[in-house]
Image 1 (cartoon, rainbow, N blue to C red):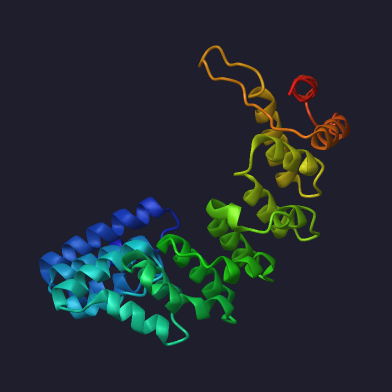
Image 2: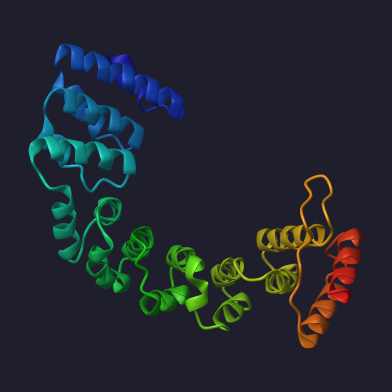
Length: 290
């Protein structure tokens, strides 16, 4: 058993999981609750889950239910099963925790997993919480509940914390039509990298002509990864401008005003050093014939 518990600390997740599984199985057979408690307190979620599953098999329902607000989804699910067997309403426990003003991130995530859109107002105050982890968790939870308050989440696109900006962009992307039209473009040229990424993400659901404009604006971005992503997207649009006979896919159509066509032609010309010649040729032809 000591060898198995030592292996639980291994760097390899597969070794940890196998060792924890073996240790938990033996502990359940022999009724060694302290071993399972040790596993349940491990910092690795796959180990905690196995320890809690063992405690659940020993009937330690209340002990396992105490992990309702764990930061890992699988652990929370096991804890909710224990709460059900113990007669505890997990939804009510999450609501009480979130209403307390300073919940753990796991409680916010748990409410999103078992709550309803009527629970969304409980999360609104957390959007202004001093802890960026809770702000991000609240945005993520509201998105999962399908109840994103646009007026409250839009300001978070300029949040000081990059993680909050990322969650806000992800939450708002499916409802981009509700955003101020110029907002994504303003973000796209911001000096902060995370804001440019957010703007580009929001523009990813727009019509092909606007996606092309966004990509061309970023092909020279100072961040190599963002520039590479923009070049790949622009190249993909160039390929989609011609009929793919193998898959019988019709070419994309551009809806252009004269002003937008001229701007895209200028941007395409400026992007020649950054894109393949074939992509430039296809884009130029596409723009002239759209």
